[in-house]
Image (cartoon, rainbow, N blue to C red; front, top):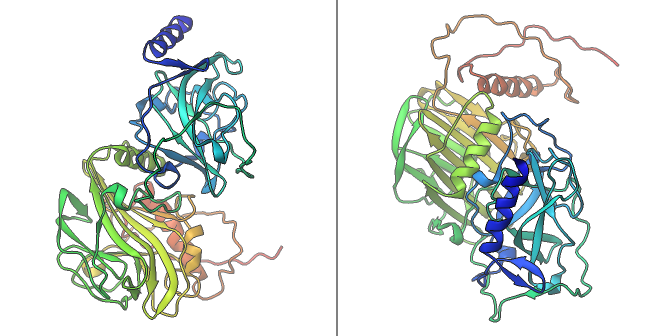
Length: 465
């Protein structure tokens, strides 16, 4: 039965293809922009060649369920990587049939080339050459791939080792390159954790006004934020989102503020986009962004079965601080909703240190729910945001904000929690215990406890090595 299935796949691919210099390929159109600067980041650790799903049919990843569109750059835990060029064993890369590149990557002068995709089937090594993809080597020692949907349940693999260098020696491989000059890039790329943004994503750009903001943005889908449903939002240049009215506030107030408005602060501080940087936003109701949101939320909240119907992405790209025009700070706030669920992703790139007051997190009316990202209130240490996380993805913080289950839990219930910690923090130092408690709290919230749960440290035992 397996032989018949893959024989049909081969025949279908040949019917819809042509032969170039003895290699099977598909008709191709010249990219309108250079894919080296117009790609989607793909950073999913399960794609690693050393990742096994133990052939469990409940957790198989299948790239034929993905609506691939355009070009992709591969990362592994935030580090640049590439498709493997050698055999990948059956059952690795989080799937049943792992896919690697059948042959070497191109070199810089080759332009856009075709490469066959090699698939490991039935425990062998490259038992089946399934389909071609386009590949390009880029300045900066990385590759981009035009992935297409395979006709079976396989997955494109990522080598767990980073790229060392891209050689510049000429190759005899058939070159496919545009006959006309490629249009300069029209989008901005960011860290791997960032969702698509820039002109290619269709972003609307805020005016370059100090302490400015967007006009009111009518949401294409209602967003539930701790019991309140919003149909509109504002993107404020100083690093935060508000719902009922815009805000020009550049000095953050401390959470919990027990104030009169809900606020989401990616990095609330005195930013100035007049001399440097872009503040932009876009909302999505279909396409690859929703596919990515599905994967992210179901990975970060494994006890949920979630399907995204709407995503809102607000990006502060290389924005300067006020009176510090040589600084650059990049971060995103992503709102995701579907069904009765809603989530926030806060993604961080390079964050410059500053003497301005700063704060990242969220706060609700009367502070019934709030969260402060540990370390985000000290401008001397906020550059660490790109390496911190509550979901083991450097530079990403994720929160469920619809209110979640457990709202009926009695507030005064006492729950004992025994935790084993591996940390260099001295919990006797001021603020260290609070940082740890915030992290423990977020883990508990992920698994169903209410967001307004209060944690207190009743006993602190110091053990010397």
